[in-house]
Length: 170
Length: 372
Image 1 (cartoon, rainbow over the protein chains, first blue to last red):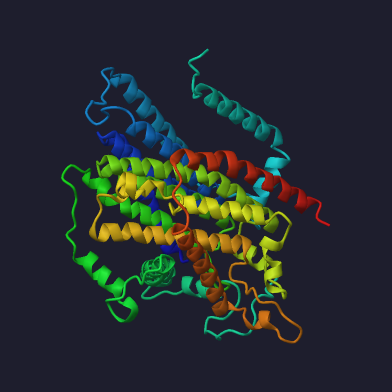
Image 2 (cartoon, chains in turn blue, cyan; image 1 turned 90 degrees about the horizontal axis):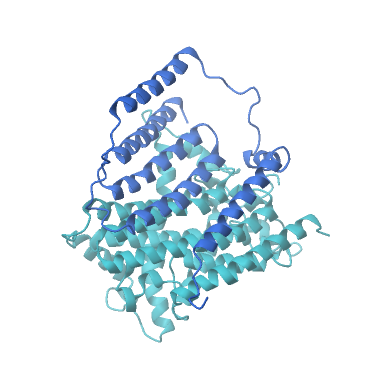
């Protein structure tokens, strides 16, 4: 693929991501913002592909679209009268909100302008990334990996316990 | 795993016969500075889905179901009713595009689109031939499992957008079913990935080629490989909402499930998506367990059947034949088995398929480590 094609496709996905993310925030209908998240997640996955992180891109789709988004949609759909009530909160912190916004944009722009160039990695990617990830997870990062597994297992058992059908006899 | 699979017995195309030669040649094809080749690569599976669902999908299913029920099926339009599908398409094209007054217009329109894209995206990593694959990713199999998630969102959009209780029930059932059956399906495919040691679809195929034909397929690779094969086949039936797992569109309870309100071309798009994912799961099961584009015929002495029937064009023939065989089995089951209830469906997934998938996973791992 030539550089132009690359650039065009990149900006296409960047536009999809940014526009759908803006739609998520600005739409008044919660259902629409939930469905719009699909395009945001998809666009972010595509941006991961441009960083040659295929594995993370697919994981992004599996975890966020397949898990979190579906859960979110179910939650929104089964909430009663979600379409009628206004979602605007009565608590407004205009001053501190603006301060936070300006601070964050300023910090991002400062970093962007002070670190001029991209910093390429010293080791180039060779062969399959999946194998490397597997080796690293099972050797150097085995302890964090197992700890996260136990945490998830505990969460799973807790969820199953909470959702269990209460026997009325007891 | 060198390039020994590419034999000389294929039509010598200008693009060459080596691995991924056709798709690489197409990807480098530019017309007036526009990457036309990339569009062509994406269009080939699309045209394939359309052609196959017109011929084998619709007409074949009607004929097969008719013969199974001792009927004749469509007989009026053309000889043996061959032109019936064309007549159906003409009818669908002329139909009024109805959007129900109380439906959520945006979601109603966008739902079938997302659904079709979700089922079509997986075709990007299906190797249609040794020389053709949409995208040769090193996470191909993972991509094919994961991208189904987008289809789920499309089903929810269609069901919710219709603003109809049958549609919503159908959508919720369908999503619950797909999300649950993804687990045994993914674990079963992981067994195949363990046998191959890679997630790259082309490499999985190459590892299953050899002069003994079918004996190299992963289905015969270990004594327990039939278990993940069976589990994935059952789970894939549920993932594409086919009978006996078609409770999302159970006619007797839900009219037609999440596409009750759809008519005309939108209905046709939903059907194309269903036939697309039917071929997708059939192709995945034949790639992971039955050698994909490898010929099942063995070399018998000097009668080198395997060498004669391998190559880019033969590869396309074999993978499509294998896919069509599994689609035939899907149709066969549809007209044989009764529909499961929702609780039976969940029982089968969580208490039968998932434990057995884990058992086969552990046994495959043990076999791979301590293989004699």
